[in-house]
Length: 300
Image (tube, rainbow, N blue to C red; front, side):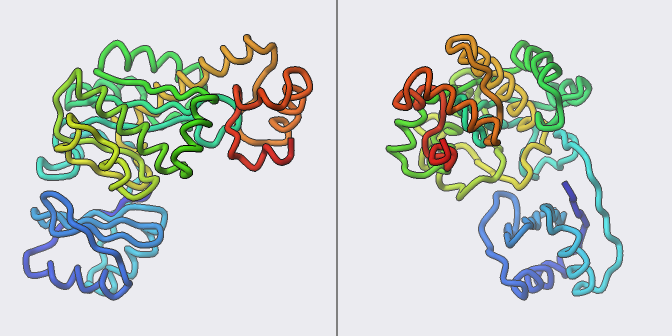
């Protein structure tokens, strides 16, 4: 994840805004900031401390254009896992927040699992020291081991939506992002029932209003942020680890129940396994192990 950061003066605030207006960025309010500006592949934030942060896959390109516009040449680009110490007190995550992430979204077989993990400065440091990071960068054996540490040390919630229930909910929501938002909101609410907190952070998968609208009484006043590559933040990374660990465990349970090894993803091997399942248990029962809105169903 490329990050560009810089510090500016009060006199430069208007000019920074003018640059993002010139590239047709979409502006929105952000607590403790002048604004947040978003476009294709980037999110920029200008905080009232005059700290400027640009992130996303298009960071390098936008940063070059930005510095040319501003008449400076001090690019600061870094690739790292963020913990809470990287942020000033008035930045996005303050000193304590609930990170949320999901697992199973792109897998034909198995459940959708959404997890929420509360972190503060002490827990952030502990999790960084343990080597916790985005679950996609870890093997399943390591994930299961790290998941136990997270569960034993931090207030957390794991929302498991098994395939049959998943298909019912998808038919109701008619939209995957709305279903994801519902799951993230439930995870946040569950953590708040155990631990008071003012901020929640998730990977960006849709309009922030989707999660906000799905929150109930406990979560309505929380400061909710979605960030591109949210797993770069230690709280979201921790949530991705326990979500993935639970996804693997539930898939293993399904494999044992139906005496079939359910592969991950949506590959040709997945289609072959689905056909075997349909032959053995009937195609009408595929909904018990798979997400039926996937195009894979047509191939099966």
